[in-house]
Length: 107
Length: 135
Image 1: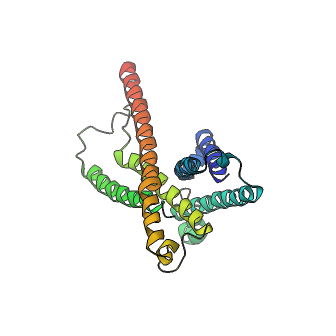
Image 2: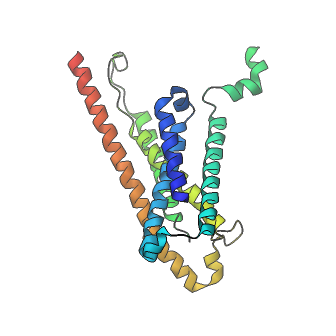
Image 3: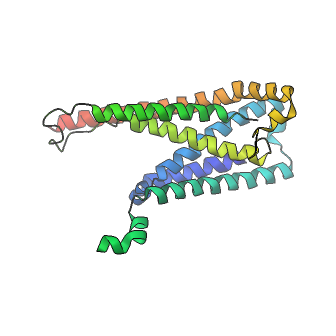
């Protein structure tokens, strides 16, 4: 579930990056690369787990699925927080600078 | 157990290489008349391509590290890895996982990046050919 949720997040971020010029300015590409990187790493994890568990890998218990889904959503939230902090620090549109130093800039 | 450490180490190495390449690119001599041809197709700097790999590795490692914290394999206090507290058997298991899963993760992400670079290079070549044909 964690892998699936991360891959869907990566797909959504990539689609937004492709479609929107303003999203590209807001470094959505970074977000998409971050999710793709994590997705690829969890894919390797899943392959190793499959090699160990075989068919049991595809029939997880409800509790495991719920825990994995909760983890997946938390991972997406953490990724979004990292991206947001990066955007605010780099401030590509100058919004933060304008908000903090607006008066000084106008002077 | 600690497989994310391998891609994180690669990410650190890539970041250092990216900084060196960026410095070299900044020092590169600009031929006279460069930048005056506005129809010229610009080549994507290699440092930018390294940035894609760096973002994938750092991002992936950070999210994977969070997963390890979630599962109690990494703690925010010394020695940070629960396997180290559990004894030598757990440590050897952790090292084995790093050597197998960790190295495979790093190789897979790098392989995907190589594919990305190859595709972008093909796009650059195509754009350059189109620009030359338009002249």
